[in-house]
Length: 96
Image 1 (cartoon, rainbow, N blue to C red):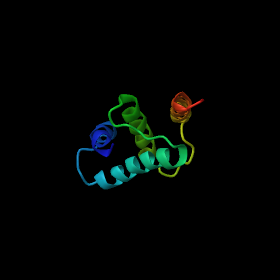
Image 2 (image 1 turned 180 degrees about the horizontal axis):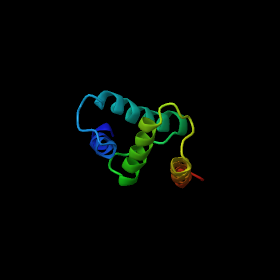
Image 3 (image 1 turned 60 degrees about the vertical axis):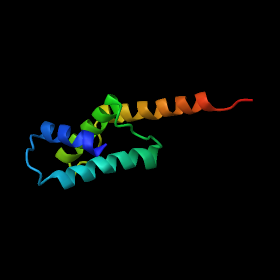
Image 4 (image 1 turned 90 degrees about the vertical axis):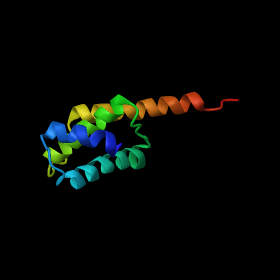
């Protein structure tokens, strides 16, 4: 996911040098890990909506390092991913 999101994140933030890459990759990796470990969501780098979700959240985290309140738009999208995951799990349950 880092390979797909990093160049987009740098473009959004107006960063053209590599000196911030380590910090940006940690933010991206942290978001991916939090989604998996906390919410059970495995983000797919092949899905544009997953890339944009990580991009938006990472841009916000970078710009607001001390603010702990995630924007409602990101919270809403995260809840939608959780609901989609639950729906897929229900479809694969063996009832009989």
